Image (cartoon, rainbow, N blue to C red; front, side, top):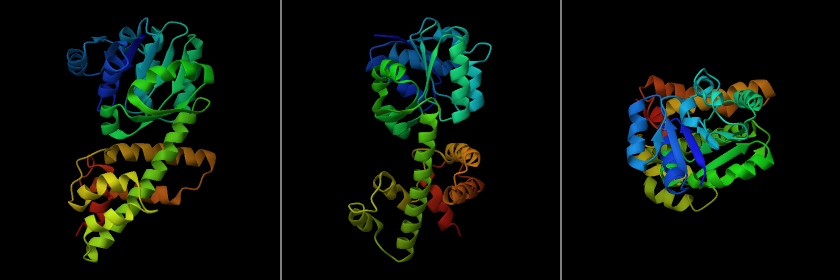
Length: 290
């Protein structure tokens, strides 16, 4: 059992912290910007709460963060009441936020000044994966530090991999989002084409999902897409945030991402339709608008 702190109890962090407590058996303290959410978590899982990130992180062996964006991450780590102000030397800071590789390297430098180790560890699998404890975790950091952290991370993960030095986890997550953007657009166009042709989408998908066209998105989203329901999974606002990170990094490293840039514009159209909180499969709604 380790002493663990978890900062950020959104739709992902709330169940992830719960798995660290229940499945991992760790002593978990939590912090959330909305204190009532932290109190709800403690009531459900039996952990403790901190009034600030620093208070929750004091004396912890492992501190996890899972917040909204780069600036949120800086606030809860290097801010006046951030976790680095109280973390003990030798502790490990593990960031599950989908953020930039730049901020990951920035935090590694800040952590080193405090004698703290850092791993960037964005996740994939969405809310369902977080609730089921079966996330994929893409890590960047030193091998020896990763080896210490992995048994703890395993509490909420199905797959945990070290991709390279700090920043590599975030770069891997960017690749993940590039793939998802293209796959969902292709699936949306295929379903739209099939409906326009009068085909039974369920029958078609039952066949083509078993071949080379098959994907997680096809298996898990085709039914709700066919029904015009988009209240599941990863929100368009979040996807646009992620794609902005991807496109910013591509301008830095010179990668050419024409399809990703186009799909990002399409998600902008979905937002203009009022679909900010629809899930990413709502690209089909854009094709079906009158």
